[in-house]
Length: 238
Image (tube, rainbow, N blue to C red):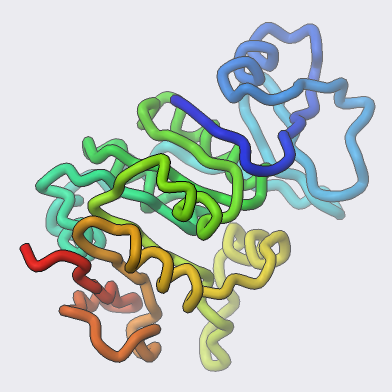
């Protein structure tokens, strides 16, 4: 599992003498500091080899490998898989990775995946989950547009899943999405899509809420599920 830093490095807090904590910090290539130094703001804590994101009031979040395992069952028939053409094992950039569930699922299926995430804590928690289930996943800590413009990788598929705007008629989003919304900065999805369309060798896939308008008016096709839709923009004539 490889990583490149385009932004500040990450720190995790725990027992600096615990062998599991030392081993995980080394695998993630992050600093391990004493849990006596934990800050009042959001931070990562490791206990008995388990990494958690901790916030005010004791709010805790960890990511489950079992979620990926469940999604892999029949994955090739899912809307995400069909939109990204995973049966051809493409090179995929999950450009707005967040918790990385979609990107790691594609990597665990066998695709060559790079996850790009601007928030180091979020990317690190994502990587910790992927260590056993999709260890070949490559990680970039930084801005997606900046990374794509570097031109250091080629991608057949660029996948964009920015956070949906609040839905006034439905229940609150899941705990993980609430936390991500609190941590994340505003995203110019239009600007990211423009760059992705210039870079991708085959297609750009944008995840939308099912009834949400497309980011562009001319997707080549769309795949609808019960709650989400995948808009596919072709960048090649193949």
